[in-house]
Image (cartoon, rainbow over all chains, first blue to last red; front, side, top):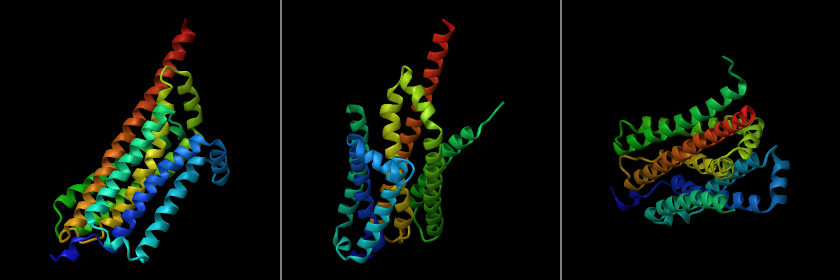
Length: 105
Length: 161
């Protein structure tokens, strides 16, 4: 196996970056709608309930960013270990961020 | 015995959540033993994880929007209001993280895992994150359920006095 093969494929790398950004966005959106009621009300009007709007926004962002990054060449140049670390750290920070937000506020 | 539509939807929601977690665990085990022969099975298990989490999202979302407000009001009046304010609020948003990771899993599993150490590590990490976050969500569900139960017990004890 040569060095190039020891990288995730283009789509895998692109969607890993998209997933990392999306989980951070999702937590930031949860904080924002909890702290700013007009945003929560606005999201309630978009798709029956703010939670449904939130989920749809996450999925659209994940798919959109994944497709954009798949076409771009930058993500391929990121070291696999950094990509994996970013995804794991983003997930842990986003999850813990939710718990501490609702524990404190 | 009377089983309502709400009961069936709620149980289906948690059942598909557990099946999604088990599918991610299946992917993890297959990836630890990645060979050319089990590549197809690994990809199918990853797809199954995404499918189960999608069903959990739709079914759980329907229950949350249509039936949960009654439970929420009950929990908030009971002795465990934090079952909603902390655990439900965290759970309902943590689920989106698990959902996105489960959508990513089949994409990551498309790489040649038997020949590519980095791709293998990526799939292992994602599957592990789905399992751990999924278990945290299931545990939160149990706390929320108990929050409703203690609220009902509290209310019935109050009525009996």
